[in-house]
Amino acid sequence: MNKIIKIILFLAFGFLITPVALLANEKIRIGLLVPLTGKNSEIGQSIIKSTRLAINTINNASIEIIPKDTQSNPEVTLKAAKELANSGIKIVIGPVFNESLIYLVS
Image (cartoon, rainbow, N blue to C red; front, side):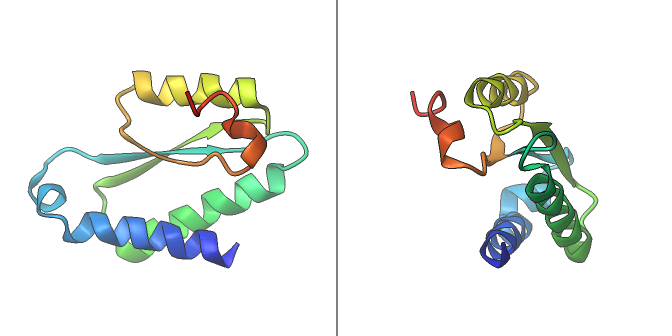
């Protein structure tokens, strides 16, 4: 879990020092593919809390987190990933579990 927090902080910090992010007036929207319901919901909730804590620490109102529930199910994960892509989100963190990657690889 500590490794995930470090990765999230690294990514968020990377956006702060990027000239494009500094010059852009639009929000940086980051999608999260995490299990919010089902057997792994506690892990998903913890990831969302960690991500929001990292964003609050950075104190940049232009970064927005958009979580999507994967239910630890590959088919639901694919549907959630498509929803994020269709809404124009270019940065996606997740899915958390390897079995959820089955349909996303292609």
